Image 1 (cartoon, rainbow, N blue to C red):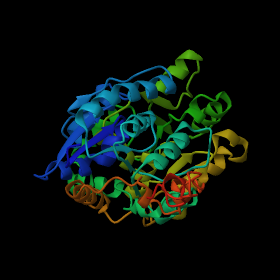
Image 2: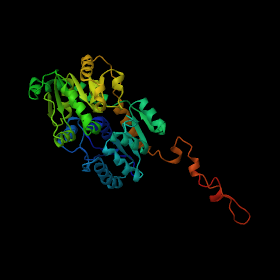
Image 3: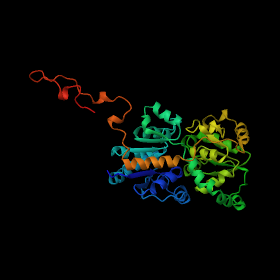
Image 4: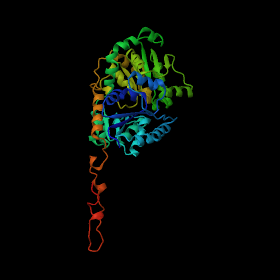
Length: 414
């Protein structure tokens, strides 16, 4: 296979956010080749193209157009459409990010014996209701190289039997992205968030909560979804809700009415979402990306999750827990009292030092130049695998009672 060629397969808007600086740094290197492949899981402009434009990422060279009505249909479409593309490209490695239907394309790479890189690996919520939890587990065990954010994530992977030598701790690139695309450009966000920005949306600066809600275990479980609607209806403030199309579909199919204080709109672009976040009183979300962004930006959040692969926001006290599956144990008045107590920030986030993207990109470039990806050869395992390759130990019954060859314990060395 050609050396120095990396295929990067992404499929949803958070993928673009997290990978933006890594993609650009690799593209800038003169001695490596990158093929950016878009699965098609997110395909509308406000979920895809606007993120390329606003994060200054060159659009993908290849679009798979993989879609479907169910997780099975989308995943199988990604696998079947990606296989011939990778077979033709024959990259040195194929990188996937996160825990979506798109990462199931790793099966196509594995079938072709192309090394797999997992960006954002070893996260675990230990909530098996989540499709994401299953996807994380599958790709981590197929991967040759795993970039994980924290030592505790690496420990989770090692506890599952993953080779620690394959897991590289980088810290969270969300810090890098916000430094590059918000803090260094804060003046432009201040200009964007003018009086008309809020009046056009029917909200008042600093007096609304921003909401997102999309997870299947929240949206597709009626009792959990009703707990969420009860919570936001009790807010006592306006809720601005850029709703995923999946959530909108559930509302329509089940003829569910939103509380009167909720303003629902279609998904928005990166800059608009950040402007809405930093000017909100707090964020109510089940998104891992949004809760991390809020933590770094100094905005308190309610994390609507039974369990989370991102407990760091609780460690620093930037987020309040609300379990939609057990709403009665999280009374609205208590949740909002705790949220309001966090307004004004005051915590120091623990998500990274702003160098994660550089670490990941530089390590990828080194591996491309040195052809250092494959980690599934027998010598690469951290366990003793010699019994799998041992000889049969049988004595040759040929005249003279000779032994050895295929029948000797040394037959079939590694």
